[in-house]
Image 1 (spheres, rainbow, N blue to C red):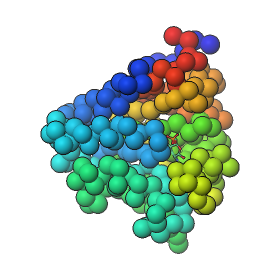
Image 2 (cartoon, rainbow, N blue to C red):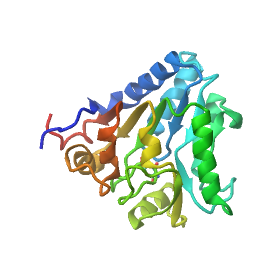
Image 3 (cartoon, rainbow, N blue to C red):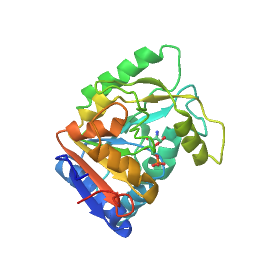
Length: 247
Ligand code: GLP
């Protein structure tokens, strides 16, 4: 089925993937040096993060004022847990870029009072002016952040039950370690409020879910499909990921 979306789809050769994505981050920071950028973890954004670190070392992007909002994490883990997405983000990007914790809005990961903490996260994000750019990866089941199938279009930051597929995918990040069965994620509604959204999709194993996200019905069954209703969403897909799209 042909693309039925106004989404800005940019298909690039695999060796141009990270540079194309980094150009978009650079453009955001050129326009607003202290932009809030929402960031995911997972394997997909790692080439982008390496490229951003390279550009920081070369001095071609100024990260000195950039602010960060963490997209998702596991629920029920302590702040310093070895499997925390925040810790992963620090090691991969925030520490090398010199972004200290005062410039980072962490998503809460512990109770009690987790609902209140999620509401505080939403409030703090608003006070920071909201995300200028929200970067996302695409889960194998169509999730964005930890918004699993069934997530509502107007969902906000909250605790969610993780699907078996998402737990297995997450466990693979830590060599099969046991991971919690709940996550905390910014909602679809929260994500859609970003001034610009960048969905990164790479590899042939994401081809079918990318096709469903961009050409199937817009529905909670495939949460990423809601991005087609965003005012300003860009999808950067490498050629293997875009191989099932008719263009
Ligand atoms: C993970 C995370 C998401 C991530 C997605 C895709 O479970 N919760 O934030 O974007 O799944 O991960 P990957 O890029 O490793 O395929």
